[in-house]
Image (cartoon, rainbow, N blue to C red; front, side):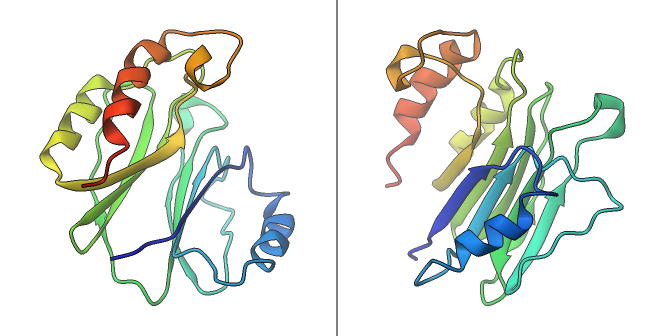
Length: 163
């Protein structure tokens, strides 16, 4: 199953949605799935994308403003939501498409990635993880390093193959 996935850390979709829709209109073929991080949306704001079902995971109010995730799935694609649990401030959500699992993650700056969440991925045969890891390391061009890079650097190297 070939799936086109577009990932974007939008850092608040509210004011950027018209521009994003314009950007999508330049595609010859729209992506099957769009993963957004840092949506900053609240229950009272209901964004929409023509031709897509939006699955949201808004940041809980007790964690403050910001954060939030959204996975937009083309109407023609069958999927089911996957229950995700994070034991840190990292936000995660997922969907299943046949035998492929797709996870969308936002890890707030200054927090460590959730080791337990990533350990659970070992139970899936085929999966894609996309998101904003807020992991800084020279390996991917950052002039600085942070604590999240100690976990994400070896993790990302091992997760790249989809076999």
